[in-house]
Length: 439
Image 1 (cartoon, rainbow, N blue to C red):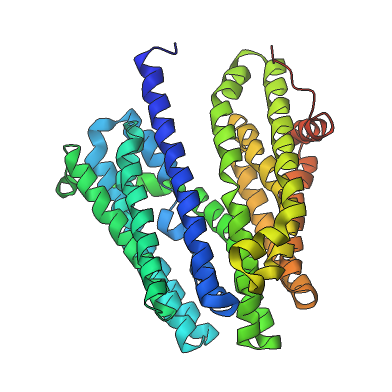
Image 2 (cartoon, one colour; image 1 turned 60 degrees about the horizontal axis):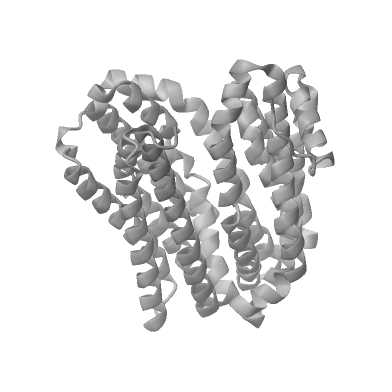
């Protein structure tokens, strides 16, 4: 099997995806350090407030189409132009709706001129996002190398532009234009790569029937995506709004800046559990079809592995977070080091949530997943409202941890079909050292 053409093809595809994630991780982390040191905590926080505010609406750009279109391109390659053309139009409509909603929200919130400008520029970048549907074509064809080359070019151009801005001592607004440059490079790169693959965007076509079909399939994923983006981005927005009204805008943005530094570092560690889960997913799916006992055993081993990864990562991070942040970002960001230590606790919930995706997928519990995402988002907002005023960024972290505790663990106890999974998670945590070969 290892020598088969099919294995080599998928291994090569996965290797390119892994390479892109590693390059992006290193380049984004390094440029983020220099940008944060240049801007300082207040301006860096203002920029991240703007990206977080626009991020609340990012699900409108994806429109839940990614996996659906890739699936249908594999099943019906002859309908490629109709699938890509229609999904591009839907994505453009979603991007246009995002811009309109962001503009309306900016006016309603009566933002200051600079913050409003940052938000509008970042939102406008999403209008170029429809060309990203070309990535679906490469995913369906198992040609990740084409898309990865474009994505790495985007990362490197973006990094170079940011270093140029730092060298020129550019004002804050120019860092928002980086997002426009990123989407422009990505769009042009995709079009060129698509042409080199022997295709052309001029052949794309939109049909009302295909649009109805895709939207009928994707609307639950749009709601699910909105809930996830809210849970991921609302902390930065609520920190800026609630603390800005009590302490002044500059102090509020400074707190967002400290929080954002810690958040970006913890997010950089999130790719490895995802890769592990995706690598083991086929084996778990096969076990589901073959033997319930083997299926349960493999899920249990996955939870054990995720908890072990949490321990290996979080304990050193908790102990070294503050000196590490000071070394990389400077003394001004020392408070972010303490926040990063607390974020290490959150890794437990994110690792287990990533592993739980295998259970959700194999049991087809997508409506339940939507329900947990909505509950998590509402709970996160509610806890932020009560915890941010007294605890500031620390309160936002505890709100996230509390919402994850409920959405990932406790809700499983309420439904008969998910109680077994709660038991597997608890057993995996309690026996994380007992790895064995399943069946």
